[in-house]
Length: 565
Ligand code: PEP
Ligand code: MG
Image 1 (cartoon, rainbow, N blue to C red):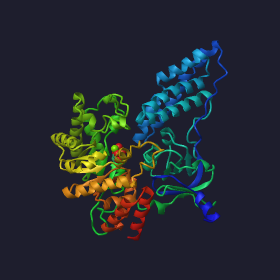
Image 2: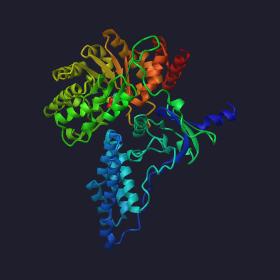
Image 3: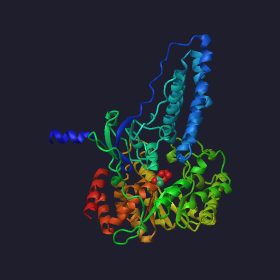
Image 4: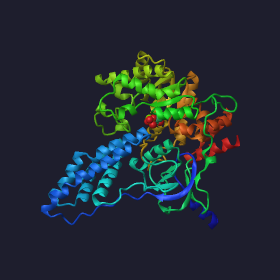
């Protein structure tokens, strides 16, 4: 290889594609979190009380600022919930008491005392693993904000943006990203994080390109002009003078036109993943044929007690209203692991992702919980009737045919006509013959299915390579499901992040998937790609990907087959 080629290769950084589209802009680096505050000099005994008393007001100021960020009109509700949770964390009496004790008992300077008190919480959360370990990052964010407040230095996080910029960070905390606007934050690049990290989810909801897990991003200099391609997962330095802005050609089509079929007329439903009325309006705007996944946790995540049946019905009706006349598939409450539902007061478990979560919370017959699911099902049926949508319901995290049967019985009893289950556990695929006999449809949650197939936490940046839906082992599992479903003519949807990738959508159709559900912003590109190819090409792309030795090989060979048509 010539020197020039090597240099060119080095100029392109590669990471995990997290949100499609491309943009060119100058790098704005998000400062690293604050370092350790000084441990001394010790505060003299007579000033300790006064110094300790500075901590609570500083924490209250931080809490209030986070709360104000979370209350910003139009903010993504998922992000708002995270901000409310972190604002409460900032004023957690246990944290503040522990910090105050460090000052009073040892004369530790207040900033250092907060730092040390937080370390105990971080260690406990990390030891708990799973979802709790993810929250450790939030405690660190809150800690640094209180420390900055006490030291009188600017809060860590995204600096004010004076113009269109490409944000480059080690990782972004929810509080960093809440205020971003697509007009100035043209693209996001992080060194850490996987395709399901906060950054990735936020970027998709803003519709800005993002590359996460981008090794070498630390080498990008402030002000350097770069092009970020969120579909290819690349970041490259471009010549000075290159026009700054969103690459509209790379962004592709903006609407789904008509009922989608392959070029030779094979029908594939292109539907949306939504969580609230704002998403639903966006889905209608881009021409989604309906909804393939309504995540219903939102109403429950911030509720201290179970929302009343009437509130639930009204909430679902409002969420579904923009989809009037279209089919909406609602997933019943998926509690546990990465989706904590405080009012269920679930017992702590050593491995929450492998514990009593999803439909298991209700299937195990804890008496006072049974009513929760039945009331939710009834509210969904009533809300859908009010909104004038065709309702389908499905349960998360089903592993066996017996679990599926019990759910279907209860959903039908609540008045649901079309009832299915999510395929998120490998056992459900291996037991598909029996399971498919119980349901009207299935929908594959590739995010969880990949996590469980590879025993790799979906939130781990370090394991993003295993959580890649192009992994041939995952595709082979889907192939098996597609074959079983063809025998019973059961519709098979995919509603995990995999369906948002047009190249992978081609493969999924080739494997027998009949509907693709992804965030509204991703749908037009997926629909356009399916419409451009015939079914035989999709099948050949699928066969090629199945035979590949690894995820990169599968991606490359499937693209080649599709490009050749
Ligand atoms: C999935 O697991 O792929 C899925 C769609 O559900 P969630 O991401 O909400 O767990
Ligand atoms: Mg899931």
